[in-house]
Amino acid sequence: MIHHIFANKSNVGDWLSALGIQQLITPARCVEHYCDVPMVPETMQALAGVGPQDRIIIGGGGLFMDYFLPFWEAFEPLSRRVPFGIWGVGCCDLKREPSRMPLDVLAPIIQRSAFCFVRDELTRGFLSACALPAPVPCPAINYLPTRPPGFGLLHVDSWNDVGEANYELMQAAGREFATQTGRGFRNFNNRIPKHSETALHEVLEGYVQADLILTGRLHGCIIGLAMGRKVLAVSGDLKVESFMEAAGLSDWVIDVNDVPASLKTKLAQLPQQPASDGFTQRVRVANQQIAARAQLFLEGAA
Image 1 (cartoon, rainbow, N blue to C red):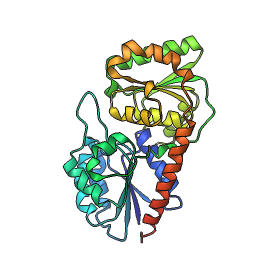
Image 2: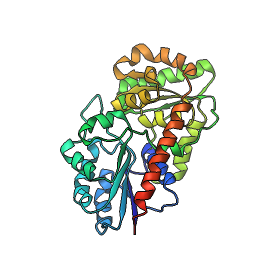
Image 3: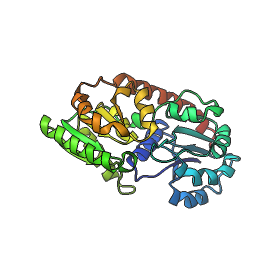
């Protein structure tokens, strides 16, 4: 049996990361489990009977954030007896509060994995003792085809990461810029009712209708670039810088402390942002290569 563990189906980024992996390993069929903290007991109960004949894939998403410590602590005994691989996973490094996972918990589990491909250099640096291969950005990019852009500005907000004052500035500046340029304006935060495929597609439609994305969320950047949009990020988490640097777009990240001085200027320049098609195509190919390795790993499942 093949088991796939990921965070949840209430955060668009987490769900799309998982869908990217599942699409890439098709036609392998897998049983889904969730490692969001309230779901850990149910997941571990469901996995109690797995053994060496089974296979587990963990990812994607920010599962190396300290929030997920209860899952990794519960998974540790299982990691000693069941083959597993880790794919598309990363850490979070919030600027306003600590968020890193204890290495003494995580590193021994990673060392037992059949493979571990993390999503960014931030995470690989955090886990330098594990000698991981080159990072490959989120497999959600493989799930999301490039779509012809609409003409609108979408604010994908992250109040917790950027702070209330910056959230309000982003809302106001986004609305003002949209009005000045004749664009529509929408905002949401990538959170949806749990397991709602309708809500997931409604969120993605919001990206389709926009040509410009203003975001405080990593997956606002990921979804936007995957669909071929121009993206301006406000970063309250170093994972945002790490992803945008990999995409060659470091100049399109504003630190949380620089929003009042920089936001309006960078928004005005956003329509001239260079295209990122080459980057997203390289990511798709790299994730396909991981998928080929994962397929060989999964062939051992009973």
